[in-house]
Image 1 (tube, rainbow, N blue to C red):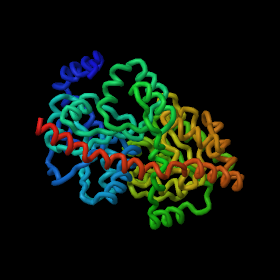
Image 2: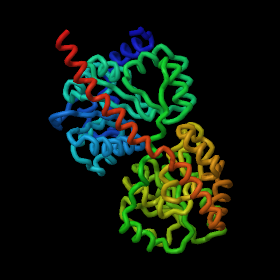
Image 3: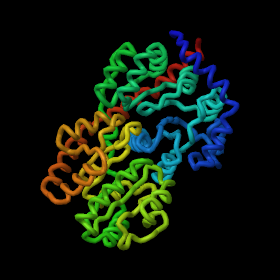
Image 4: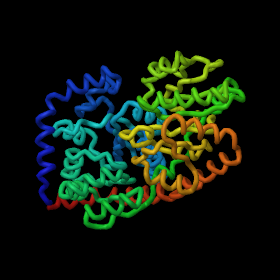
Length: 431
């Protein structure tokens, strides 16, 4: 194995800061970013029991990757009912998503800190037969420790921004060493496949973006009917997954719309639901979904709940996919509104979903806006022209319908890795 000074320095640095991790996690828990009751999991200490038999471990960073992991688990379970699954994630929202899906034979844990002790305890406790990392959530100590334990590893749906790929190019020795730990690597887009092929030193296949293969988000018919009755015929648009700084832009755009459409309604859905109270205050005391407050004649409604992404995209004829109006945020996933026929608007900063947005925009399935004036102008234009809005939605749907076979092909590749562990252990035992 090639030696990487960068990875050695990383291991040393994590050893130095590990004793102070508790202070950092407690601070995050006070801010609502960690589940205080489950903080021991971040140190590799668990109360859930490891299931008997073959265990597939999937690591996903946040909500989007967790959704892909859950779809993949369903596909794998259908092909091999003997499998059990462990999903590790890093955020409370992703933990809530996994809990709501409540798939059989599935255990969720928070990913351990990338320190030697936490990683060792995690791997010793769960003893996974296969480890699957999704997209770009790569923790060096965790990966190298799993490799040392002869756990077959896969990196799937690899999807990295140009900036991330540039870092991989600069730190090629470290990147090559990490990628060497994976028995299988597959990319979600051509840009990532080409770059990782260079770093890995052998071709990285492009199987397609697994997020495109995911079904449309679930829509609760009863909740939709109830909200639709409250909204009536009012002109409606949605600002989805907003961040601090974008809320003000959306509210300013809405104030411009109200000058032409006095009864217009904006549904504000923050990326982090705990910001609901602050947004409601910013909007002059807007009613909040989390508090079961009716919409009434309010001009803004705050959708600060989890698990209702599909509901509000399905209701709104036009949606701003936020995280894109401010440079450092890099955008959010446009696939959900595309699959639920909500006409997509986005800011210019969507680097994290560049490949998907490029395909949608090239097909005429989304419009780019910069600032409150353009946002209001495009919302109004889509409200006025039903035919143009329908054409835009159809184009977005067509662009996101590709890659439907990626999920099944990925599942087959992963199942083929399962015997590799048994063979490796047998060879090791006889050596």
